[in-house]
Image 1 (cartoon, helix red, strand yellow):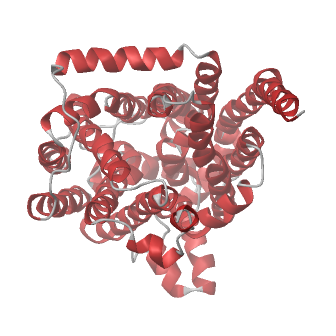
Image 2 (image 1 turned 180 degrees about the horizontal axis):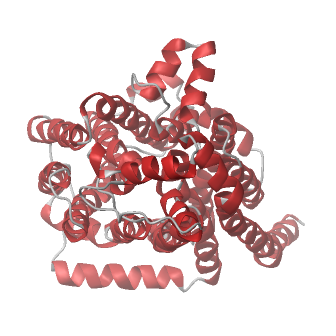
Amino acid sequence: MKKENEKKLSFPQLMGSFTKPFWIASIMELFERWAWYGLFAVLALYLTGSTDEGALGFSHIEKGQIMGFVTAILYLLPLFTGVISDKIGYKLSLIIAYVMLMTGYYFMGEVSTFTSVFLVFLYVAVGAAIFKPVASAIITKSTNKSNSTLGFGIFYMMVNVGGFIGPAFSSTLRTQFGWQIVFIQAAVVIFINLLIVLFFFKEPERVKNNETIAEALLSSVKNIWEAIKDSRLSVLLVIMVGFWTMFNQLFYTLPTFIEDWIDTVALHNSIAELSPWLASFMSGGGKSINPEMLINIDAGAIVLLQLVVSYFVLKIRHVSAMISGFIVASIGIGITFYTGNGLYTILGIVIFAVGEMMTNPTFSSFIALISPKGKEALYMGTYFVPVFVGNLLTTFVSGNLYQAWSDKLSLLQTEMVSRGFVMPKISETFTKNNYFALASEKLEMTQIQMTQFIWDTYQPNKIWYVIVGIGIVTICALFLFDNLVIKPKEREKNNREKNNIA
């Protein structure tokens, strides 16, 4: 009888074993990621774009502060919002989260000053931080030992399906109807989630205790500190800061780099020769490929290839797989910034996606592996710590560094001053696009020629040295960590097992 109970379930049986709450949580995750990435994939473009196109015209330093600081806070808060959700209930937490997200997304499209955008985006981040731990908790409670691996695989797939659909919709909508529709789209998608939780979601059973919210929050902080005191875990978390700093460039820096330096009209024409439909899809019906659709190749590749990559990674040691993933990701991100050729940008993003697929899931699995028995959840709670720090560091790379080394407007302004040309300041009546047009006229070049001249003269792609450098430092640190900490532990464990057998 025992052997019968331990018999492995078939794939159809596993799929049939998932409960209604599991599928509701997975669908809500898809819609929440649709709304988030539908905005986040284009946010850098919206913040720094020319005001005559409906964007805000902020500097890259302001963009870096808005995206970096706020997103860092978003990934820190789940350490505490999860505790509060356990107290007030998942359904109420989801309702609060969705009301905040829905109103926040809408009003982000209605404000235009740095302070107001920062504060409204922070409001959105708090809503997202309330949602995050609840969705994961529902999946955890809705799965068991027999189906949890597949369950979290489906959940991760939903994340990337939503992450792919959102930018695809935003690309077409903003091209056809302007920027405001992107924010309305996000609000509408979250409203669907609100309807789902109101009419279909039932509160699951929760373990209740007599702790106050303040006591529970303090206990959470103590638990995280207890886990971080483990030197193996803390060193690993510091190393993973490098991965997240590098990964963030995909959304923070690359969209504006593409907008500034990649000839997406030529890329559109090249793709159209192979598939007119694909070119139209990636351009949102326009004549140039939208940067967010190039970024979206990352999510698309994960949806298509994650299971294949995971299968091969299973055969490799955890740390070895992470090191290999870092190497692949560093090569990919380097290619995207090294050249102004759009086809190489696509190649680089695909390569980076493979590295990401090798690294990120393996990192989660490795934390679970080094967790002491009975403290798995405690150790997994530290996952967001390097994400938080990585976002803070990205503020500098995507903001100050990009502004100084790679911003097309800043470099062009430097060139115009060096030539003695007097140019009007950027204002509500004289936009970035006006500046580019007037500079092109004074330099007696087409805008394509002017862009190539600035590229050749100032080499804005040199930012890749820093981004890839972060990857190389991370690879070296992880290699040392493996040889000085992990391998000795493995040899010690193997020796104990041999002695026990003997």
